[in-house]
Image 1: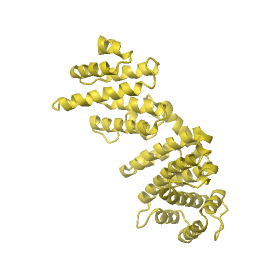
Image 2: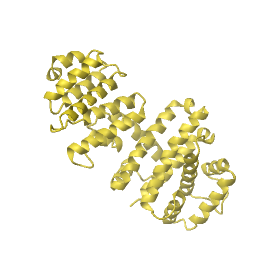
Image 3: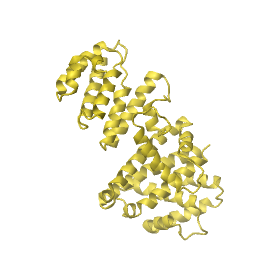
Image 4: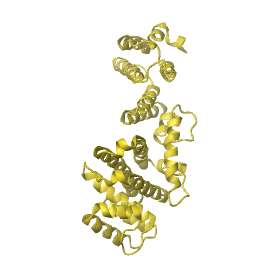
Length: 337
C-alpha cells in the first residue's frame, strides 16, 4: 500500500516534519482524486504504533486541511472524499479521551458520507458509531461501539420492563428522522457518563466532578424531554409532556401526582429526589417505577438546567440517579409509536 502513495510521502510518514508533510500531501491531492489509500495507510501506521498516538491527530488534521485548501483553489474539480480521515480523527480523539472532538469528527464523517452517497442514512462506519449499531461488523471502531453497547446493555438489564433490547431502542430512535438528533445526543451523553464513571473518585469525590456529572445526566434528561415531546406533544414543557405520557401508561391521576412532587421539591429538592430514588416518596399512593423514573428525570432536568453548582446528591447517589434517568428513557422509547 505504501508504494501507491509515492516515495516522498512514504518517507515522511515515518518522520515528524509536519511542514514537509503538508507540502507533500498538497502535491499528492493534485494527482489523486480519491485519496483513501493515504488515509488508510495513515491509520494502519498509527494502529501499529509507528506513529505516536498524540501525533496521529495532527497528521490527519493537516492532511484534511490540505484537501480543503486544494478544493478551495480548484472549485471546478471533483471534491475529494473526506469521510475516511474524519472517521480516523474521531477514533483518535475518542481514544485519547477527548470525546467532544471525537464525536464532532465522527459527525463530520457522517456528513461527508451523506454528501457522497446521497443517502440520509448511509450504512457506513460513521453512522454505525453515532447511532450505536453494534451489529455492523464492518467498522474499524467496533470495539468502542461494543463497549458503549455493553454499558447500555447493563442498564437495560435492570430496567423494569425487561423486554426491550438495545437494538429495539435503536430501531425506534432511527425509524423517524425527527428522532435522530436526540439519538445522536443520547449516544454522546452515554459516552460522557461512561467516561466519568471510569474516573471514579476523581469525578465523584470533588465538587467540580459533581457539576460535570450533573451536566452529563442533564444531557440525558434533555433527550428524555425531546422524546416525550415527540411522542406526546402539546403545550408546556417536561412536566406536561410527562403527564400525557404517564396517562397513556394508565396513570389516571398523573396530573395530581406530578403536582404533589412539584410542591415537595420546592420545599426540599434533595429530600424529594432521595425519596424518589429510594421509592418511598410520601404520596397519595405508592408510585410505580415508571413514575419514579420520569419524576426523577424531570426534577434533575430543571435543576441542572438552571444551576452550575449541582447538589452533592449527584455524586453520592449517581448510580441510582443514572438508573432512574435511563429507566425513564427506556420507558419513553418503548412506548413511542
